Image 1 (tube, rainbow, N blue to C red):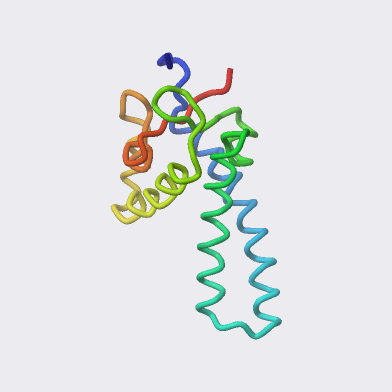
Image 2 (image 1 turned 90 degrees about the vertical axis):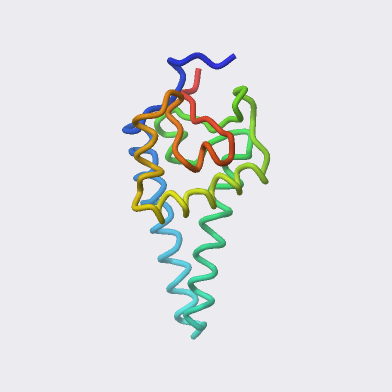
Length: 134
């Protein structure tokens, strides 16, 4: 059973997101330079960025770490509603739910600060929790 004190709040998740953004920015910048040097079309660069970002989040959150590098750094993990590890499919659902959170002007992310279980819209869609590690 998950205890209320385990739910990760907005600011802790925000810091994890900043760390992940920094890591992804470096990785994607390097990858974009390589594609530019190979004269790849812009659409390939855009598609590759979406693909790599999705794989970063979905693979890491469905791994034994249950977290991205940013979440690991601040002591968080992503779980199902029972505190168990999520599947790659569930992590994928959660990742693409973030697009909806952005589409509604970030309100889906602000929900983290106001919901009982500290869930954003993407968490609610995928039926996931972000918890502080024990």
